[in-house]
Length: 425
Image (cartoon, rainbow, N blue to C red; front, side, top):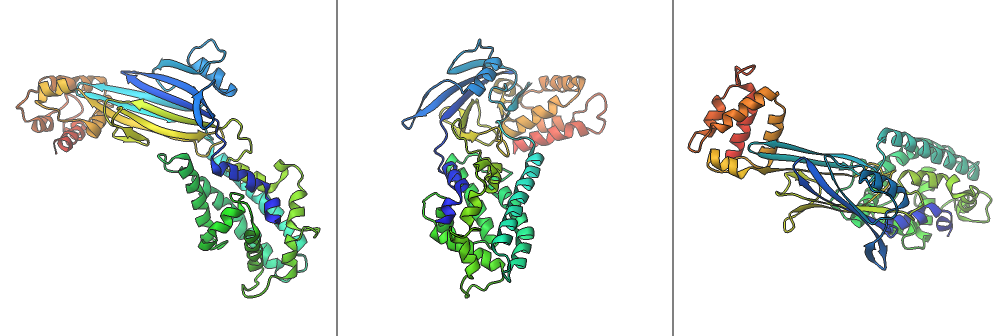
């Protein structure tokens, strides 16, 4: 089967689709105490279908040792206290705590390892896509020399296919990222389905061809029907009607004895890295070396459920969890994990308001409002709150409040007045 033999890149990519190449897991667990975050990172390896404790990968161990002030050597876990998110994983991030009299607000944001130069990655895609289009034009121009429909096919390859190679890659990689709460298999299938939808919409195959293309990627094995589909796609672009038989020149592309067959053309590249299909697939992140593939899962303890996060809240254990996902320095785009939450000071609010009147999103926004004020104005506001007592018309008190300077119309206090009004509703 010339397609299967001539497409080693697709067969290798199928390994990635099966999700069986990850052999290391890093588990990150965090809790917060005021301005600090306590963080533990532990390493595990997959053995007989189970995760067991293991050392960190060599390329990560020295970085983790520096972040946690360890002497070095082989270790399975590390714990430290930080005022921000350490760069132990090779990514970046921050942790912020904004205290107020009414309660505290928190931000956790962490970018996992990945490619930050997205424009550079897109430019690289342009290069590998153009090379693949150029190589296909050269091959088919030689293999189909003299055929009546060749000029039409050349125009298609040079125009539409060149553009589709770029758009298909961007669709599959989903530069906005798959849904973060998906597990690994769901994320991979999501990429696959997006790519297939593009192929259908662009007219390369029909919805009913899904099993044919799936088999052709090496996931199942045999590919005779994909061979027929590809040959028919070429003849379509040569202007040959579907009810006409495939011309002998097109059929010869599948004959290994023909000097310009697809199989011989692919074999002519010799080394795998010289193959234009491999270069194209490598842009997707298929680097064909999965020996050290890594997953990272994260957990963050919090007193309250976050008002916004892209993980899953475990109410029973009081923590936000981000499922294990594969990470790679070339990942496009890098995975981002975040949580925003607030914790009301119930004692202060009960003493001054008679109940907890502001919490959740409103409290988080209130903390940002207060910390955005100049220090003298923030002090005036805190002094005002100290004087409020249960039974007062809180909303009216806030509405009539004026700062001593620069707020004659009450515009600075207006936004917080609206927050308290929203909370009261």
